[in-house]
Image (cartoon, rainbow, N blue to C red; front, side, top):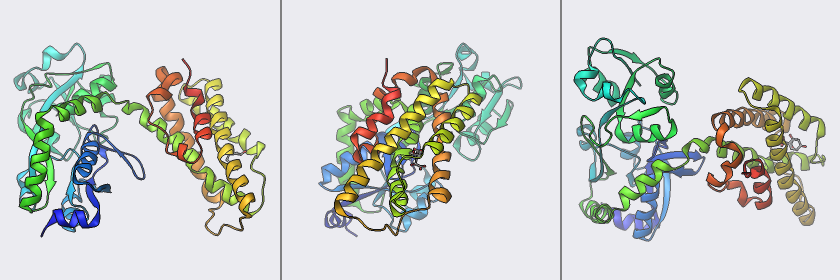
Length: 385
Ligand SMILES: O=C(O)C(=O)C[C@]1(C(=O)O)C=C[C@@H](O)C=C1
């Protein structure tokens, strides 16, 4: 087994990534992974002189995907465990992390020690199945434990006062306190226990030596720590908004192909009115002002028409024929657009206070590759002061 030679021969470093663990790995689109570990992986690939290919994996299938040879290494906030060490090597660790409390600001003094937390009157909340639950049950068995299955809304439970605190990875508490000003991490620099994050590697000593050398250098020169700070500060909260805008616009070519096949006009004013009315209606339920929703959806529709018109012009020029791969507009594409409407509105509601100037904190749209002017139109309602 000579992994380095394989990687060079292939011209690719294949990195397994779960895409669900901020700030390490987050899947923002089909082939769009971001985060600290994705960035470091891309630097590692660059150092090897090859292209980075992210291979999606998941926590339950991590080891089976690894053993099936789907990637050369896995890197997405993976902790070193004895269980995994039975099947793989780990690089040197690049981060140390451990469990620490997060609570509503003002309560920090009440939850400094495990002794304070391990009391019948303390309402502890935890997501099931992982190391957080194991930690809570081992170290705070006397506390009143709520097992809450949704990792996304669990922090809202603490804000709402349905629970007093959660104990999770210190890095996550630091990320969540930036996302929710009502929440405060309790001594994230001195967590209760310690776990190491490292790259999951195949059993190839030469490869491990190479990776360790490279990683050791980046730790020593402070690049890993700086990267962590930057990804903790990243505008994670805006990603679902960006994703919705992008996905909607990325559907425009499919709409155009469907219409081209029957030589239909691009603009359909009754449908536009329907889209906007439905969005305004749903937006009200989320507390969004009618004018805002209207302006945002008008801009998305204009952007879609821009992409479609540019394609029509190109196809006319090329005397393009029938597209056999065009999806059905009514049965497939419009329901998809309606689904995105809901996501767009939800992400608008989640970002109400920063919405009008959100564009400057967004990564570029993938759709800007389709049409820069359409991307600009789509973002116009978020580009104000
Ligand atoms: O559904 C269509 O027919 C589309 O072309 C999509 C869309 C939209 O963005 O919602 C865009 C232009 C049409 O005038 C109506 C709707």
